[in-house]
Image (tube, rainbow over all chains, first blue to last red; front, top):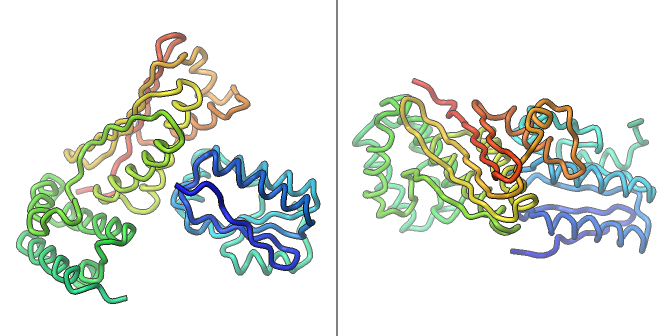
Length: 121
Length: 215
């Protein structure tokens, strides 16, 4: 099992592509790594690409919300991209509302959104 | 990507065995012939397509016997016959394994992507509750093929138990850790749900998921 998810910096954007089976320690590690990276050097946007994830339970979804909130406090806008229809449907039926983070259909749309003026959340 | 020669041979044997039992439509034939045995997702999707086809064409009562023939014909290369699973849950890693096992088993029952995700999400929520509140426990995945194909997730632990079940399931309770949301969520995505718990008595949860295929 891998113990870290890489965070890529492209100019003023941070890009995280989650390819692994996410376990909770990995989620916490990622959260703290993102914050450390933002502390080191500010970023305009953060994209969490979850297109390779087959399962996203409420715990991990909440962790993403917290990450987005913390990043927001550090001046960074977070977009979760690539959520599969199966995950979107399951989370919705479970009563989880994705109001805590912005979403985009895919990575490309997320990057486009980050280069456009911000919407009101 | 082209499948290797031996993989192509496996696929041919699988297809021949399937055709001996049911008529195989061109699309399924194509899917079987293009699958790579080492690609987990491809194999899972193929398994799901085969089961869906058999249960629609020959009825769910015939699924098991046909799958057994397919496994024999391919020397067990794909392990298509679904079996009950018993998983010990006591840490992070076991949670990941449980999710993975649930997805694979659900695909062997013909569950599509949405149903697979639902089952795995339920397993994930219940397994996490075990790790967080009881430390250790067990999750069983129980297969049923008749009268309708279904997968039951049974979680069991000897942890502290839950005192305010009605409050938690009714939505009036919010823990800092999210126990309520997880259980309520599992209840709402399952076709049937039962929770048995009392302080000091441990917790047992049962969540039933029906295959979308019906005949």
